[in-house]
Length: 439
Image 1 (cartoon, rainbow, N blue to C red):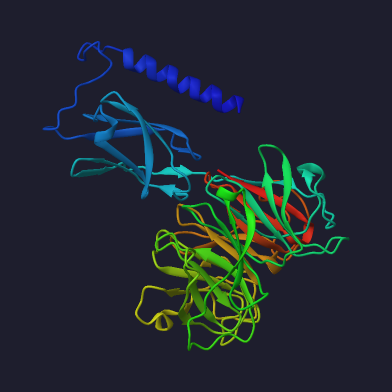
Image 2 (image 1 turned 90 degrees about the vertical axis):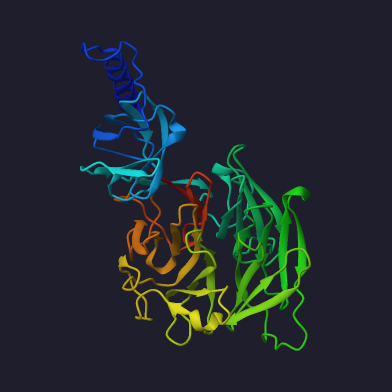
């Protein structure tokens, strides 16, 4: 932290000296008038590498003074423009633009590119925020809390909700909320059986599927202080029903506001959260799925993580379907490796392998994080559909915080993402909730 402050101070000092310099050909005014009739020229930038929110100085000629008149991109991600003098412009490196970045400057209809790349460095670390390793439930202070977190989600206000599946001495299972600000674990509902939770990005309401009946699920409304309400979706008349209410995950589509869930028997349905009317979207291969997500970069595409009992070659896979297609069944495709026995392999999604992938969730930039349970690690699917291991050592179990070389998990089942990009993990085998900080 001290090193970053020193570097930033030096950059500002150098910039101040440069702005005040007069070589005899320039005005003593450190700001140089922008002439839209003349071309903008790019000369250089520094530093040539850095991390998320790195301050980068772009040097050129005839740069717009008004930051609203210029756009800067690192690869295809927009960078925040802090200020400009006409010859020097400060920008901040955006989040996860890729390892090697092309910096482009857009002025009006002109797009200019610096010939040299900017090298982006990513650091990831994990810390334990709740749970002491004991599954018997105890709420209160986070450092002394006890529970067995199974699945997790984060709402728009960064409240963390956890669904537990293990039984405490009183015979209860729980829905809990983690309040990091007040360092507290709070039990919201006891003696309930719930699965993967989902947060509505607009209303903040939380929904959790349950297997009690065909259409049952719980809802938690922040306007009611998340008091648990049991709901029953209305199955359409004349449409065959599943034999059981085995549905394990829910997700809210930010485009239409409907709640989507999938049954073990393969039916993908959507539920109107106001009327509770249920419509069949399509039928997929049979098997358990503990993760579903929508991606803002691929509107209408529903991504589903299939457990090892997935039928018709879909076991241990990530597959997708287009809910907006007139015939969604025709769009169902396995995205990952056709090897159904499971394994671990990074790379292009068509060759990537998972072993019992569980909860999957997408951030605002289009990165999908997967709790790869039986590989004991957290995986990421980039917007370019490349798969990489973020943290954890494939095939090795344990509990250890730290960076890429140290971090260990044991059967992580849940992932949730906060507004700042932090990833929360329900580390089920270690009876802890952990937080990934990604820079």
